[in-house]
Amino acid sequence: MGNELQVMNGYDYKLKNYDKVIFAVGSCENHGDHLPFGTDTLVSHTLALKVAARVDGVLVLPPINVGFSDHYAYFPFSISLKSETLIAVIKDILESVIKNGVTKIFVVNGHDGNIAPIEIATRETKLKFQEVKIATLDAWWIAAGKLMPSDTFEVWNGLGHAGEGETSMALHQFKELVNMEHARGVIPDNLVEHIDIKWTFNELTNCGVTGDPTKATQEKGELMEEALVNLIVDFFDTMENSEWNYASTSSVK
Image 1 (cartoon, one colour):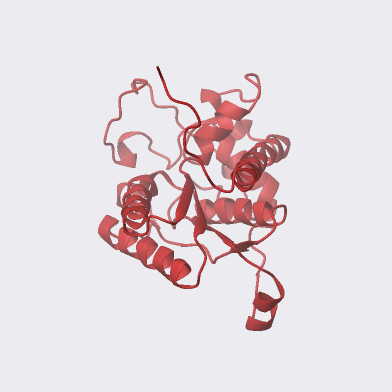
Image 2 (cartoon, one colour; image 1 turned 90 degrees about the vertical axis):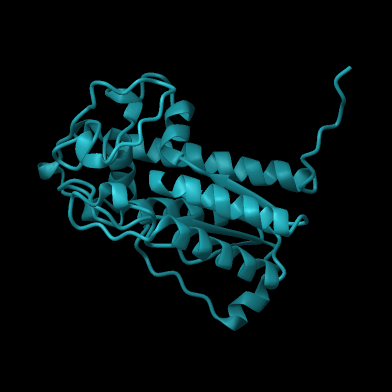
């Protein structure tokens, strides 16, 4: 379960040889009338826990529960950090991990507003600490849509804030926190592929949801989670097998 309490003490830490860290960056914001405010944190943190259960030496840090959500603030109840604050928080966490001797770090992002701050924080940290390996899953909702068979989703390829895909994940991971009788959504008509409009969320929807959550199922969520966890686990396996050397092995003539 994404909402179960996970604890560790100093004795537990000494029992395992942790050489990798994974942590989630979520948000606290409106997800329509059917999903909890902390959905982004619950989903991304659960993915981190599932990955750590399958990869040796991975320590799961507490998630960042508040992200950059000002563009969702027209729907209560949203709490947001400034983008520069989130950048600073992520950088502080990364540097703390590095000071503890761990130099392989994976960030699981759960919210669109966090993508740019995560990019800046991780890039600047990498430039400061060249020996550190940092990887991110920036948008699990897009990755899941590409990993699933083409006929998995019924509407908008499962996309949307609290839409078919995200609601499916919630039904699988924390069904007891979902109220499907209040699920409804809007599919924006005039978004153009490859062009990024800097919207505020009230410009896209009048109900706090994009996509169609009524098409969500627990089974779809289970398939999405499995595909995403496999993706990250396979990444760790590949990196471990190559001793985290991702340089090119051949030159172009």
